Structure formats: structure tokens, C-alpha cells
Image (cartoon, rainbow, N blue to C red; front, side, top):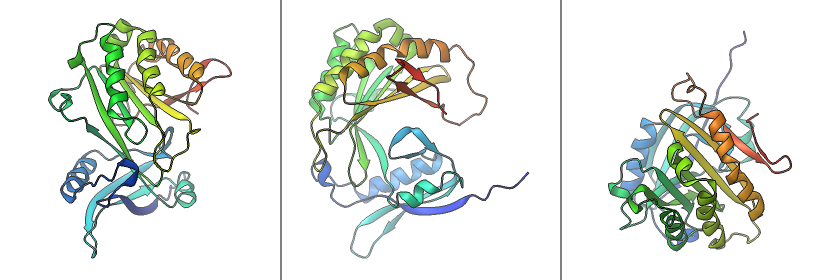
Length: 271
């Protein structure tokens, strides 16, 4: 058997510079230090262009904070990448990271593993959109303290419209796919165009349905609400099939991500 030669890579994930796409927010050095500690404890997954259906194989990830001479702090990383995935690094010299932050005063800080968690990129989905989505689920009987909402921040040259819906399987069965679609539909309706973004950019909706130690992840990218609706309604059959199987014995590895096949009206298994 031929040994695989993993390729070393390094770069900057984010800095303490002002971020115009998010209204000029600044991530302070102290937060960068906290993030470095968090990702060193549980290394962050790498994906191509923030697309969860395109994971990259990595190992030996290390993050550290470096202070530049101009007073700006950088969250730097070092990592080894599988040779078959290293091409993505040469084609895309820039690296970026996505972090989540709760909306002040909305209770997520005090919630422990909420049954439903709704997140949206803050450049595209403001607090009103996220809270309105939560209200759509409140309308079908879910208590406010069962639903967490948070802002997503993509530290890249041009943040893309991304939504993240994380829901416990039993809750999904209880509220039903139509109720989940109502929550997603509100977000799509209230989507704005980010600074430097394009109004025609498609939205990526990333789902995670979990049941104990098992979970299924799925993603659909579309600008067609009918396609998005059909994808959400197809989650029931997908989750029912995947979650019946025992969890993967590969502890620590992320479950594969299914992609919506609009032509065949079904969730397609990962390659």
C-alpha cells in the first residue's frame, strides 16, 4: 500500500479588522483567542466555498493568534490536507471561517442544546428575519425557549446567503415538514442583499436532523421557492430512512451531507 503524503497548508481565518459586510463590526483580539482555544479543542471542518456537501479531509489542525505590527490581530491556522483535496487550496488561495453568535436578549445564552436552532448569515438575514422564522414555529405550538436563533458570520471576501436549521428528529415529527417550511419560507421572503452581494445569488439551506448520537445532514441551494419547499418536504423520508440505521462507528467524523436533486425530486446520497 502506498503511503499518502498529506500536504501542509497555513493561512488566516479571520482578523480583528472592521468587516463592512456586517455593518462594520470588529471581532476583538480576546474573542479571537477564545475561538483559537475552541477550534484547537475540536478542530473545525473544512469545506469548499462554505458548501457543506464538499468536505475536505484534514488532520493536525492548529490555530493561534498573531499580532501584526499595525495593531491588527489575526487568527491563523496550520493544517495538513489530503492530497486529493489540496487542489482546492491552490484554486482558492483565500480561506474563511463561519462562526455563530446569539442575538442579544433572545435567551440562547441560557439554553442548553435547544431542540431547534435557526441560524442565518447576518449580511443576508437580519434579526427580524430570524425572529420571524422562530415565530412561525411558535405558531404551531413550539415554545419560545425550545427555539434558539443566532447570527452566522462568514469571514470571507464575499459572504454568501447561508441558512442553517438544526432540529431534533422527534420535534420534526411533531411539528411536521409543512411547519418547518413555513419557518424557512419566512427567512427566504425576508432575505436582503448583502453589501457587495448580488440579488440573484442562490440561498443555501443547510439542515441537520438529530436523534441521540445519530444525525442526518442535507443541503439545498436554490433561488426557486418551489424547489426549496419540495426539499423541505422530502426531509421526512430522508430522516426516517437514515436515522433508522445505527450511528457510524467512526467516532468524531461528520455524517455525510445529502444534496437535493430537483430533477428527480429526491435527496441524493453523497458521492
